[in-house]
Amino acid sequence: FYALVAKENIVLAEHSIVSGNLKQVVQQILTKLPAVSPSSPKTYTAHNYTFHLNFSNGFTFLCVVNSEFSLRVALSFLDSIIKDWNTKYKDLPSTDPRFNRSGGCNDEFSRILSHKMDYFSNDPNADKVRSINQKIDDIKVTLRDDIEKFLERGQTIEILVDKTDELQNSSRTFKRKTTELKRHFWWKNFKLWILLFIILLAAVYAVLAVVCKGPLLPGCINDEPAPPTEPTLAPTHNVTVAI
Image (tube, rainbow, N blue to C red; front, side, top):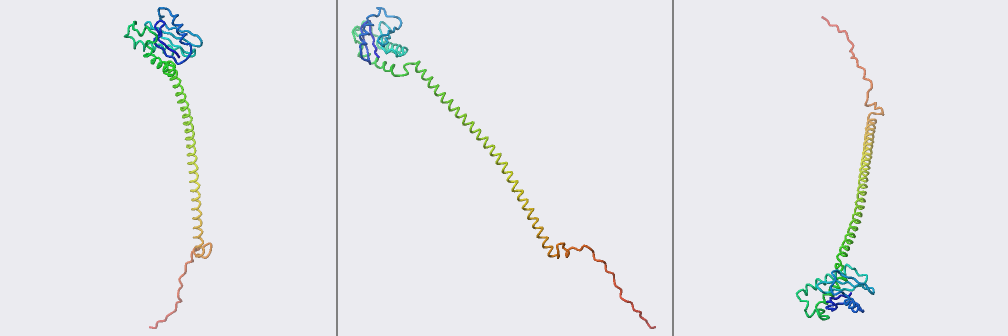
């Protein structure tokens, strides 16, 4: 990455993070520029490098990047340094001595170029479109994760519903079996009470049979009533009374 600010073919400020003969190539480009600055940015390609130029108030702003570097980011870089240059030197006349000698603004502006180059080379926020796309991608990932969690939650809910149905069925089955068990024990108790009642009757009958001298209870039961007894008359005797 290489960048500079020039007036005609005089390089006023520059900064580079690569080595090579870029300065010589750039100098050749500057000498071939028309006397009147173009009204729109220009781009040239040579030796796997791309040269982007923009123009403002008689000054040329240039950056050199590799051919894979984003055109959008490179032009944004030029727009940014143009804004910083105009802000810093807007009150100086074009005849200022610093604008008429090589490196006249290098001590002041090269630091700005270095900072901007680092920002636009490494910070993803420098490319607003890329930043927005990244945010969209992040949102997509978040939505996908949320959908997956929602689906997992839905599966969990379905499992819980199934478990609830199973519990309800188990509860009904348990209730039915409990009712059947209650009936079983009720009948069992009922039969037991019947058996106890029969045993009690048998015991009473056995006692009566002993007391009444026989299984038919003859000593306690009189089938025929006793015949009525006739009164017996005493024999009469004749008594003679003497007068």
